Amino acid sequence: MPPDSSEPRASASSLALIGHRPFLLYFLARGFSEFAYQMAAVAVGWQIYALTGNPLDLGLIGLFQFIPTAALVFIAGHAADRYDRRRVVQICQWAAGLTAALLSWGSFAGTLGTAEIFAAVAVFGATTAFEGPAAAALLPGVAPAGLLQRATALSTAAFQVAMISGPALGGLAYLASSGVPYALMAAFWFFAALLNGAIMLERPAVADEPPTFGALFDGIRFVRRNPAILGSISLDLFAVLLGGATALLPIYARDILQAGPWTLGVLRGAPAVGALLMATWLARRTIESRVGLRMFQAVIVFGAATLVFAVSRWLWLSVVALVILGAADTVSMVIRIALVQLATPDSMRGRVGAVNFLFVNASYQLGEFESGVTAALFGAIPAVALGGIGTIAVALIWMKLFPALRKVERLE
Image (tube, rainbow, N blue to C red; front, side, top):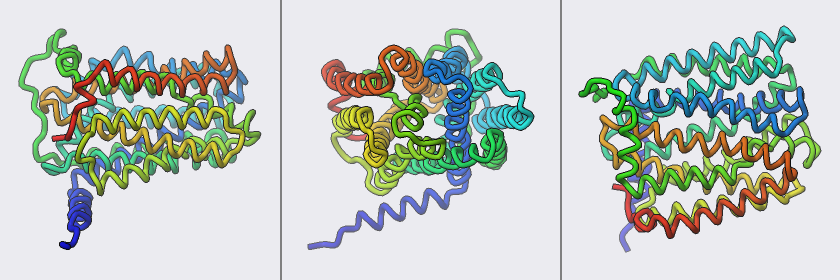
């Protein structure tokens, strides 16, 4: 029986990616930026709930972040196709870092209130609106030819390392002072901006058409003409919109599990543990067949894990459910990102990425708002349970509505 050479090939491909300087700088910069955003989720969520004690205010965090994202994302996508994507990302990280520094200053001075926090969240929404499409469109330019799916999995792994460490460190830092996590966030964003500035592209994007109002919405038209892309990103929108429970984690940590901010950090980081393990696996063992069906199966597992988390009263079971949730979400995300990137010409990647980014952020940010409203009306446990059931239902309905997506065999 001949020896299996797939393992050495997978290791060699991963090493080739890490040894490729543009991808390495991108990998590190995106990791540090995501680290800061995850710390913000813990610091902002805990501080708002400590100030008001109102579940609806936790939902408003997502709404205040989503409004500028929705307003600016199509302009941001066009900017990613017309200007240097590295510089767009870099400017966003400088702006986010400065905002975090101001939050830290206000916290240490004792002058920070809910209005200032919500304003900062809106700034973060604006910076992510520009950073997300530009960074997504930049990935194919920094990845060696033929290694995009592995690059997607590795960059996802970097995000998950940040998501594991960021919430836990954010919770620990908050124990010292509410201003400490904001100071750390500023440092990470400033460092990410420096790393992005050092990226040298072999094939930079060059705008080949003058800016027009109609060009802003070319991404929408492109997505509508491609049923597989439309199905994949709309599936993510509606499934995570219903199944998003992260906005209610402060309630679970304090009121249901009877714990403090460090436990909130653990709960926030638990999905990232599963995501990191899955992303590491996918970086070595790419999905070779039936990728469309695998994505639907992953969304169903995501919904089932959400349902288990909703009814759990034990920390260990809650953490296990969140780990499985994160692993399932990563399978869906890697397939969706690779499918969108491979099906889109480079000159359109910013605008198509903007549509994808809007759908993804709508699912998380409006999902937080929906969870906050539902929890205020019915309680946290029914809100999360209904979300998990809804996610499973959406996946089953989408399998019927988008047979072209279900039948996608390979990512080529």
